[in-house]
Length: 157
Image (cartoon, rainbow, N blue to C red):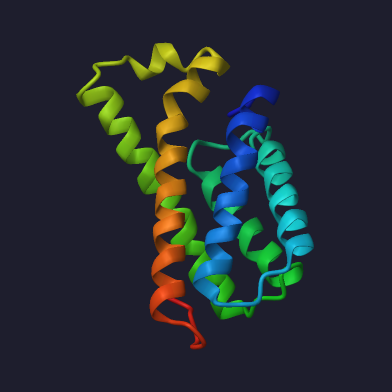
């Protein structure tokens, strides 16, 4: 099991979920509905939390989270299946690359022993906050680029 604490849920998973769903909205080019956005982001956060309690190997939770995200985009946000799959996979891959880059930086440049540090929920939040900030930066850049260059067109990347 890959349990996460309530601290991680509120300081990491919830903001991450809101960013991921917002990135999907940006890339899909669909009209933004605040209530659907909030509902789907909160449900995605809860599903991440619950999936982490399943007795599965590391990595499988990522696949399940991606499937839940795609389903939420189809059922709640009313995005097409093609846009939900494409934008959902791109968003989750972006998140994975941010976390991988952060992990590489922590191990290679700061020489932090990740295995020992991961025992404390506060340390996990602290060490992986840069990947959340990087994801926020990427979302903002994509938002600016899409709004600047594709106004009024089909915006799915």
